Image 1 (cartoon, rainbow, N blue to C red):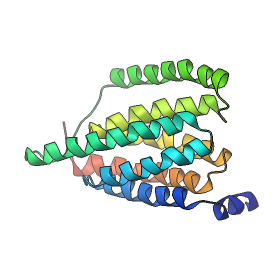
Image 2: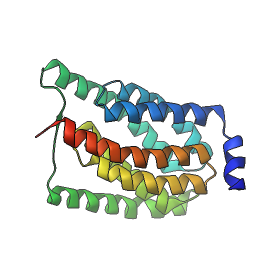
Image 3: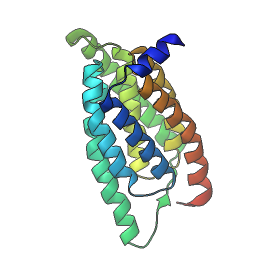
Length: 196
């Protein structure tokens, strides 16, 4: 516990700002507010630097993709609103989820050895798995697939461990909170949305 308090005390302003914007993102996403993409884009832009400093290179690269996906999410969610359809939440088949799991495993198996061989990455396998699973879950969020929240519960819990192991205490706490909030997101999207 003493280590956690030392890590929290050593947290820099960049990580702290990214965490606060991350909380804003998840709170707005649960409520299906388009502004979530602005908060998420800003948070992930800051995390590019935080993760580079922590030698989590794929997590840093993932943040670049998140900035792009935040712009796409802003556009996609705005398009639904202007079409007058509101936010329509979609379902995916188990077969499609199985295919995505295969893609995540394949992406991990391809990139983790490269990180191990060519960089000084702190945790290449966890970094790669967390990155590819996050890409899948984010794509589901942008496309308004209800099960994105189930994916996020698992992904965020795993990433919380990874970040704690690298001394990013506030970020680890954020991702544990994300995992818990993903449960709320799952219930909110299932009960308060039209399912397609």
